[in-house]
Image 1 (cartoon, rainbow, N blue to C red):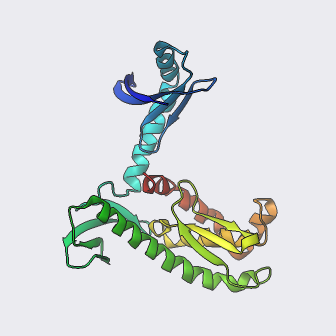
Image 2 (cartoon, one colour):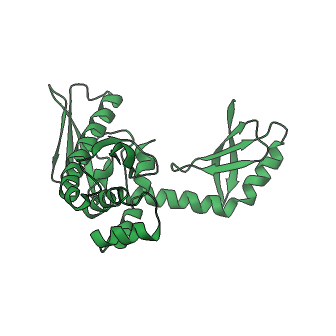
Image 3 (tube, rainbow, N blue to C red):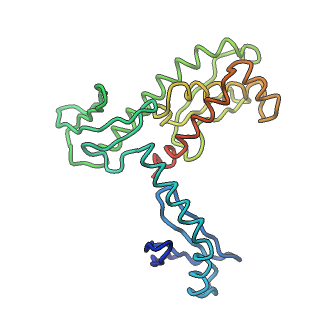
Length: 246
């Protein structure tokens, strides 16, 4: 289905929203993590009715946009992967520096992550190098933590789990007990170490309790008594996976 861009005034500001006509029964509205507004509507609904529908949600829309903007400032991720852009590493804000080099590579020196590239003007190459570095950092941190935690969860575990990393929009990790598999978000290195430890402990606990029942949290708390505090801190960085997927 084709979509179109339209303007609308909300909270004394002019916003662009994307309107898509679809085979749906009702009007649907969604504010994306980047602050953009998306509306899907049946073919027969007039544009005036659509705008009335949007305006009826004006306060909620503006509040969400403000929240996403504040979250993005607090937990930044690069957009163009150019000099000076900010990103989070272990919960702290760092900056990028792009450098011409004969061989591609990345190195964190203090608060600066140097991206060494043959083609510094290649935006895709900059993005791929940053994402590889972040995934490698996440993998190194998680593998060490998982090796430390593994003995506590034996049994039911009888062998070290298969550990994988991939991009996730809304999850930090997942556990598949039947496959002896743990999957972690490849941008986990962005959050504080204590939060990374919490994610690992949370997923390991699913080998014992596959649900999120009271028994699950009792088991998790017996291993990590301050897990609630760590979980709350992790919530402050919930915007990062969404930004990382843009």
